[in-house]
Image (tube, rainbow, N blue to C red; front, side, top):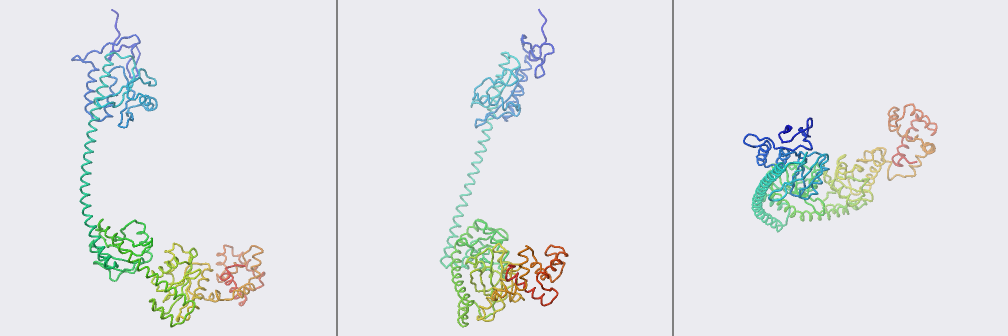
Length: 593
């Protein structure tokens, strides 16, 4: 007999120096594989390795781990290499194993998907004998294992591979069944929780219905009693056990029910109140602000007031919110009725104010003022308000009236063509009304003129002109916006409405005409330089800085001004006339040529 070549553990014979892709020697084309030598007990290494694998497959319920174990031990069945593994998800998608090579996602996976559940050949780049073997259990396909063969397998090796595939599929069936049981148990647990929640909800609904009946009963009693603020706050306090209050939109208390009422009640801060209303208006329902649960009372989108529960400890629950919402609905018609009455009073106030500004007899004026609840026998001031970006319509008049009330001004209100007029019974604060209006309108572009004190209704027309003069002086000044009092105008008191404009223009032309013409012809600023020089009190450094020019340039301009105008700035009379002329030119004529 010829001498036989040595065999490896897989029963392969090898040529000298030949190695497989996985570190073993490759068999020759003509060699015949022999069975592996048996281990003690008559079992081969293949059988022992597969026996351990089969035990491990059923020791875990993790489908991915089962697939990975099968792929790691494919080589124990013969000349096989596990190229890829896939698990079939419930939706029919193939989920690749973590051990798959990245290029298989593009090359192999589409071919496996095309098999549509059948076994079949699959071309794997650089490999031979590629097969996609389905992992099928009792309930159908669980996934695929893609293997290649380095050489033609024997019948025994094919049997071992088929055994590995069947046991892997069986292990997957067990894992999938276990997972379904877990999911069913979780679903059952969820259903039980949902049933318990529904039972609790039913109890809550029954309690809420009883509370709603109590709320509707009390609100019906409130409506039957007239529905005023006192009845509403008392009912709300009875339902919630918390102090209840009503404030008007300016923050003044109208009604309080329950303990802990502040005495005296704090004066409202217009800025804080506006911020509070804006914050509450952004919410769809009651909102918690500064220890209160607040609901706005509105009609046609306009805020009439505020209903609140005092709740610093946050004790109000959804039942308190429900009661507050119902109380707001009961209160809104009452406040709307009061608002309509206020509008009638406002119309009467306007008619009286219009007659006073136009001129009316004292006896009639006093009688009408008493009828509308205004004390006309006190000293008054005329306040004229104009905002650059707002028309003097009813809407703006309401804004002015609300702002005046917010800063504590008692007034009669009317409006002219371009401005709103207030007749107030004491001297206004220097900037309170302007600041309140700037905040309410969101714009600082407003001017307010205030007359001197008026002691008799007969003097109202004259003082109305004074307020307009103060307004116009302010609007034509550099400051433009804010509040100006007529009795603080000084020289400007003679440079406003009521003076002969032609005479003022002639005066300006007499003293500044040559400079104005020179500026027009040479595109220069000699007239403005002279006006700025007087504004700075003749100080060279301040004048040069305000014009952003050098001191020597200012000296040159002043010399040219003397030459062009023919006037001597050192002469007291010329200097006075030139200064007054520049004031008129800027304030009355608006710096116009």
